[in-house]
Image (cartoon, rainbow, N blue to C red; front, side, top):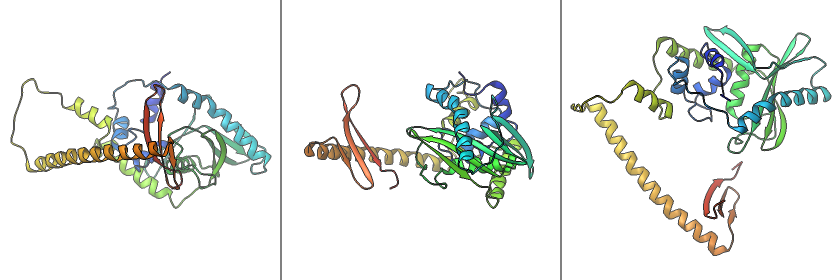
Length: 301
């Protein structure tokens, strides 16, 4: 199924949502989640191509309501929350307000009401490749999730937010209290970005696939070849590009040689994996039987 319905896409263009703020601040871990790509989205310049959910994404979305219910049950059991009313809409609960001239939007997975107080519930199903930044304490959520929940608190006026997360198969609840000293920073960045949306003034090109697609749509190839004298500023950019290509080649050559030395060391030791305090290296067979070298920093290093 498509990730977002046409109505949801239109709603996202009305203002700044909680996941947008991390993108504006440049801390989103997601591919193509860049200020330029977000500007294209908000100004309606993205190609209307329905990206289909992966099975893992569909499972994660179906699991969100369960994670919210589990969190509330546990928080009430531990006496952290009192008896109240849980609201889990069929679709994410969309809230909106205007703060300092910014149309601030927030989609909530759930909200729990205890008398006049409200608590935001955010569900996360974190798999392989996205678990960096999650640790076992209340401060152990990644920056982009912290920013997302702070925006939700700002928009909703809730007392606190609880993130119910399964990280690599392990469930934990994280509490996020309002950080009102941080709110003006988010609002300032959001207001600056929204001004670009209103005026059509694009952020800097950022090397993303969305930026490249935008340039290809904006400047189709001329019917005949046209040659012009190169301006000085473009000449400097061309030199940077040539130098970058040379650097990439040098680094690729270095990576190849170093990789062969690591394979030689693993093979000579008669093992298929080295693990150190800060790094690990494996040289194991994949499904087709070919040995593949993988190196990475150990979590927490």
